[in-house]
Length: 365
Image (cartoon, rainbow, N blue to C red; front, side, top):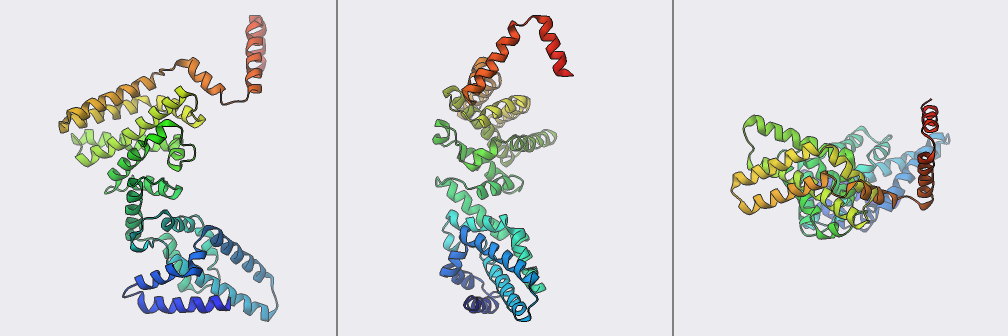
């Protein structure tokens, strides 16, 4: 810890001397440092958090003066170390645009409360700095991270969970929501997702949740109604709505294909049912999409939009019928359960009507 303390002291001096004029050299030096690089890793960072928690617990019960002084030194150095690590969040040297540069930000965000506990015995100034870095992140950092995400997805990379959270957040930022909705639709349109369910993809997993579907539909319907009251939408607003509409149609269409092939996830089957329940809103957005493309005079785009809405209508009507849906559901449960369910069904069908009525009355009671 004394060696780490010397390390920390050197960086602290570097930051204090250069931060006001130009913080880049200090952040770059820490980024390149082997110790800091190791500590930014998930396994080591979480170990450091656990170590700090154990030290706080051990120091809380000590009554030996010498040990108390050592505890104060250890906890002080740990707080300073966490503060240096926090200064590296949002740092992407030379715009490398690699997921690893944003993974540390996500790691820090997920442990924010535990990190703040490390500052229980730190100075008020250090605790305030940590709180600011954790909870008052600048728009510049967000802008860099958002630009990196767009570039990475456009180049064909998959999304991480932290990317999904940022992407959904950007849907509510007026200047960014158009790009966010179009980015989601573009990502979902990759052929690999149509061939088979994206079981491990964080964006699909989030979009299969009914809460997320409600969020997207409510967001889009609110904008659609505002456009109606204003007598029309601007191009950016139409693109925003178009991106959300395309996203929902792609989700429904892919789920439909996977159900047809017999490899749909239970989440996808549930999704189709939920989309059908909100089918009126979906079709309103589909018609808005058609009208917006018509207003721009894109004839090919109009044909494509109409075709997409027709596909959506077919899906919402239940093209496969009840029998196919039941078959797909049965494939997701064990054969033993199927046999039990079938036996109970046959037994109830064969029983006299008055016996069935008595049993149903008993069940109700």
